[in-house]
Image (cartoon, rainbow, N blue to C red):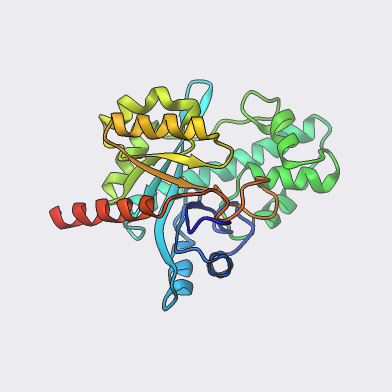
Length: 277
């Protein structure tokens, strides 16, 4: 049975395979009650999703996922109930998107020098109107037969510490938390298991939640994260990290069992903050 809550969903506004309208349609078909649109470094899909859900039983939470950097790893910060039209937020996200574009071009050049020639125009076509990211480079590699899967492209060529990897402009995790707070959003640490050591510092700097329910997490891992959230007075959230189209295999819309109370607690927390503002 699918969950009725999915708070980690991507669309074609970033590197997802379904448009915001198609995501809403699929969520309704699956009987979901609440989803959050959390595209990478962009809020461009939110308006379309909200419009598509208007008059239906589905609640769409406006969100974003910001990629940040720590030594030897990445940390992703989700933002919920963000003021997605906020000029400061939009200018920050535009800077991230431009950095992704430049990084993608440099990766294609590196791969070409390695003998894995890619057409930059084709990579841009795959990205379409969305934010160009590494999954689009991986899909171009898959089309050319250089790899057998998107995962293989990341593992062998374009993942961190791989031969064609290129760094891009990033915020620190604390800066991302502060950016989301400045846009009246609720910052949450995405897929936090491998970076749980950061929780105390982030909690002291405005983090409000942990993504405790996540694709692939075992019951014991989820239990550990729920206890960690409780220890630091944080909300527990959850979602599938849905991209569609096999971008992240096994991460299907509504595929992670997220209790309805998770969405209710998040909404109540947002409403309390709004009432104090």
